[in-house]
Image 1 (cartoon, rainbow, N blue to C red):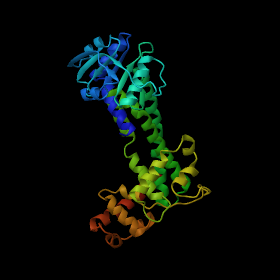
Image 2 (cartoon, rainbow, N blue to C red):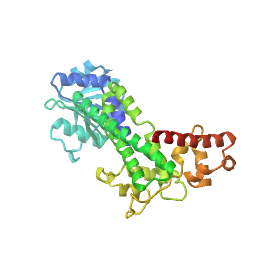
Image 3 (tube, helix red, strand yellow):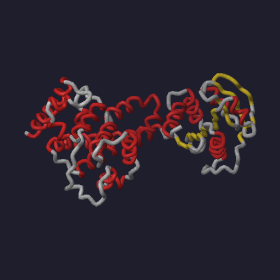
Image 4 (cartoon, rainbow, N blue to C red):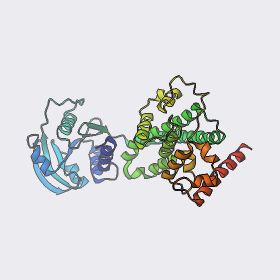
Length: 360
C-alpha cells in the first residue's frame, strides 16, 4: 500500500468525528493514557505468542466503553473496523530486539508491535497529551486541533500565492507562445510556479485528512486553487520536452515525477528545470528560444480529444505549423472533419483576438 493511501486509511479511523477518535479524546480529556490495537480474532491467534489476553469483552464499540476499559493497565484490542471491543487489559510482548526511537514503555510496545505484526496501534500519552499512531514502519503524531488549523491556514495562504503566481505566468506564456517568443527561462519559470503550488498542496494534504469531516471546506478550497494544474504541467512537458516527437506516456510520467523530486534549491535553479526537459545544462536559458508543439493551447479548444491532438502534432510538428494549416490541411489529419477543422481555426483566431485586446 502506498504511503499516502496508508495514511488516508489511518486518518479515516482516527480523524475527528469518528467513534474511535471520540473515545481517544475522552481518554485525553481525563488526563489519562492508553494503548489501543486494531486486529481481528484471527490476528490474535496468529500472534498469540505476542498477545497475552486479559479480559474477553467482545462487545459493541462505544467511546464510553473504550474510555472505561482503558483505565486498566494493559492494551485494548478492537476490531479493524472499530465496531467491536474484543479484549481489555492485554499484555503485549513484541520482540525487544526490534529497534524503537520511543522512550516510554507504552509507546515502545506500540511501535515494536506494529512493526512486528503490521497491525495498527494507537498510543495515548498521559504525560505529554499526544496521540501517536503506528502501523508497520509508519509513525505519525496527531496534531493539536488548534495548531492543525493554524498550519492549514498558513498552507492555504502559501498555496493561494503560488497559484496566483502560476496563473499570471501562464497568461504571459500564452502571449509569448502565439508570438513565437518563448525562451527556456519563460517555460522553466512557469513550471516552477506550478510545481511549487502542487508541492504545497501535497504538504497540507495530511493536515486536511487529519481534520476529518471538519476539513471538507478546506479540501474544496484547495481543489479549486489547484484545478487542472497537474494536467497543465503534463501539457507543458509535452509541449516543451526537447524531442522531435511527442513523449510516450511512460516517459511523460518519468519527466513529470522528476520535477517533484527536486529540492527547493533545485527548483529555484531554472537551468536544472531545463535539464529535466532534456536541454543541455550549459544552455543560456534566457536567450534560447523554444517552440511549443501545441498540446496545451489545442487542449483549450472544446471537443478536441488528446488522441486527435497527438495526430495534429505528428502531422504538423509544432504550434506554428498547426496554426498555419488551412481547413483542407487539417481535414487530412485522422479524426478531424469539417467541424473540428473550423473549430481549431476559430480557436486560434479567438486566442489572437484575446491577446490583442489585452495588449491595448
